[in-house]
Image (cartoon, rainbow, N blue to C red; front, side):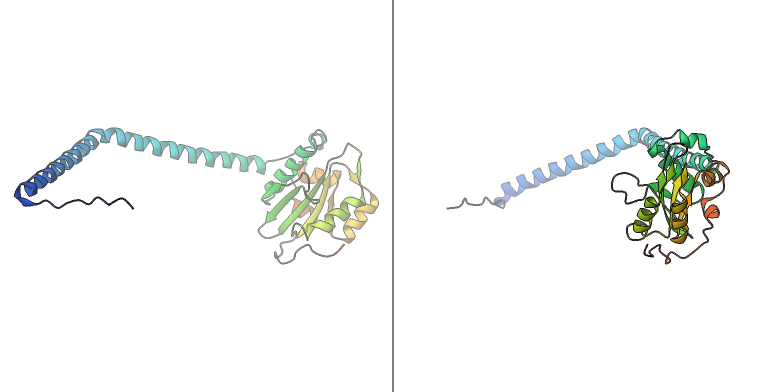
Length: 226
């Protein structure tokens, strides 16, 4: 059998009622005293609490101001960004991709580096409000190295289906074979060789000006078959 539930018994008789009333009154008095003590403690501590609130507010304002200043410095640095061919030649593959990303940001293309395993022929992707999305395949080579047509095929094949790009470009600090340039021109895969890279990175010409990219709707995706 289950246990019987204990229930509070109502006071019976005047003595029990009086005792219950005394207990209730004591509890009420105790609660009032505790509330009064809490109010007094707050009154005594308000200067300290106010100081803590002001300190927290000042720290918050300082952090926001520091973030804003940092972003402004980064924007100013990128606006003045110039990279020489000698600096490109001294980079490794990852540094080259980061540099191209920064150049895109300088030109008004919010960009991110995506290069790595399984990048599907895209190392940097940038999105422009008026010019759509651009996919950049970075090919860092030794001085005098050449990029062949196979790179163009790969970029053309993934730019639209995998990345929903409006523009695709292959950038190298070297040169392209004649066949690669001709194939890219026929199939709308832009190429930036050493000479164009100098104009873009060192002379400060914006990439969309260098490639002749006009403002266009985001509806015109780079999705034509190779």
